[in-house]
View (cartoon, rainbow, N blue to C red):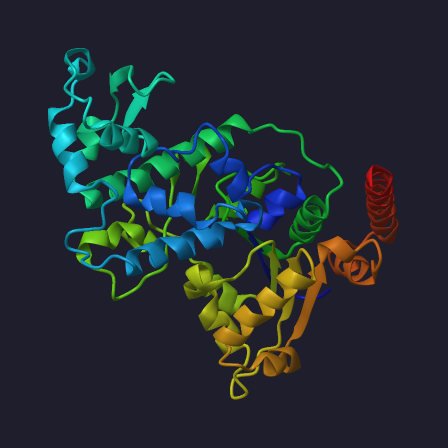
Amino acid sequence: MAEPRIIVLILGNGFDLDLGLRTSYKDFWESEFCPKKYPAPIIHHLNQRWVDSREAVKWYDLENELLNYYKGIPDPSKGKDIITDEERTLLEKFTSYGQACGWYNDQLELVASLVNKGVLLYDGNILRHIGEHLKEDALKSPIWRDRKALSLIKEGLCKYLTSIYGQQYSSNSIALNVLYAVNYARQAGNFVKIYSFNYTELPVDYGDGFKSVVYHVHGDCAQEKIIVGTRDDGDIDKNYDFLQKSFDPGFNPPALVADLLEADEVIIFGHSIGENDRQYFKAFFKQQTDYSRPHRKDITIFTLDDSSEVEIKRSLQAMTDNNLSTLYGLNQLNIIKTSGIAENPAFFRQFLTEHISDDVQVDVIMNQLLKEKLNVNQQADKSK
């Protein structure tokens, strides 16, 4: 009998998207739960950043942009405000009755500007203001508002994900079949740990201690505690420490780094392994390119398409000091594109066979999967 293997499965947002869940950054930003009208400089920056291309924005783009925003602040000790001194002076005197006595008649441009920034509300006529809205917050420092904005993003994201909880997902998705295959290997006696970078619960519970091997790296909405932020950066001023994940009061990630180093097999599904989470992966990939300590491992990365495969390889290059070829040479590394499985099912079949000992069951899974993919492609062709 073969020795039990240590298998680590890592899940990113691509896992939820493959299930058919609306968990993209765009879905959240367009929802009622996103604080996109809150008058914080960081919200204004994010609103302007992807005006015409929000469809393509990923969660790691948001995390990168938090750091880009910080780097654009001239003086981090003061912050970078979107409210001018003139607008601040007006706000300090603003009341809902000012219009009645004509006090704002010569300041309508300032009032309109504050309305556009979401600080004041009006009922469709710039001359009939409903009154104060976020005056108290707007008069606080931009740093204070940025801190609150990040808190509102986390709160809103949890509410959004809770609102779509139970949303119908594809029961025959590639993601679900990967999860099933890994759990099959667990039930066969292998040691399995599942690390999810998502804030959502897994779509199934296989029982038999399954939940005990699942870890949420950055929290989950079921516990109403999640972490959103950028990577550690020694150049960030203490006033903006809150932008870094590691400064979140709830930051206490599980031992992913140690488990990766000890694993015999690593499976990554729908995670970019990009710059903001690189601290979890770099030691592992560096180890796997070390000729002096050869420890061959099976590494399978599931990603969407050719474009995302290139992004993955660039990340691997960066983490191995441009030794991607060595990583291939010292390990069994496979990158499987989920969008191309219908046309080239051999690699996925091999993956299933290595984890599921029942060949008949593998055939059933592949037949159902390919049939579903064929139906989807046919429907897409008809809609053209």
